[in-house]
Length: 225
Image 1 (tube, rainbow, N blue to C red):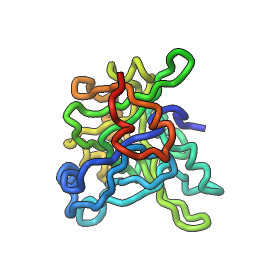
Image 2: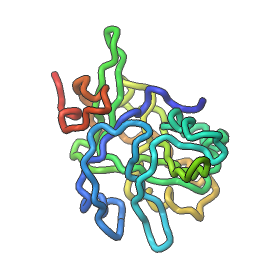
Image 3: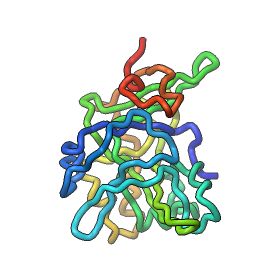
Image 4: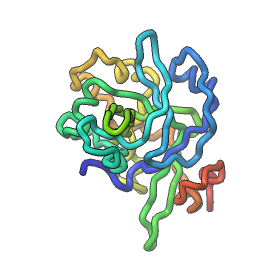
C-alpha cells in the first residue's frame, strides 16, 4: 500500500470560522467546532474550487479510490507521497483533476525515543491556519463517499529530528494554482510539493493524551517539559 502509516496521523482544526474564511477566500464564514485531535476516518474541513468560487466541505479523511471494492481501503490512504502521485493508481487521477486544501493549524508527529514514541506538536509560531495539499475522490459503492488524503514530502530541518516525512503546506499565494481544476498538467503543480521553509514553524513535545482520539481538547497541544 502507498501510505505513510506513522506520518501525519493526527492534526488540528481549531481556528475561528471568520479567520478561515479570510485565509482561504471563502464567500461565507464556516461554522466549525474547534478540534484538537483529528484522526483518520473522521470528517475534516476541506476547501475545493467550485463554480463561482471556493467552498468548504466536510470530507472523510482517508481517500477511497473510485474503483475500490469497499470503503475500508481509505483507512490506509490517509497520506500520499508527493514523489509518486503521478504514478500510483490510487492517486494519479485525483492529482490531475481533484486537488484540494485541507484546513489545519497544527499537526502531530511521533519521535521514537527510549523504547517509546513521543508525540510532538508542529505549528506556525504565530498559530496561523494553513492548508495541507490534499487530493479528494468520490466513491459510489454502497452509498456516495467523498474522501481526501494529505500529500507528504521529505522533512525540513524542524521535522527531521522527529520524522523523515512531513505534510505539504502551501502558502496562500499557491492556493489558486493548486485548486485550479483547469490545470491538468501535473508538472505545473509538482513544484509546489516541497518541504516547507522551517523558519516560521516550531515543534515541541506534548503529552500522551493525543494517542487516544477520544481526547479532543486544548490539552492535547499543551507543551510539556
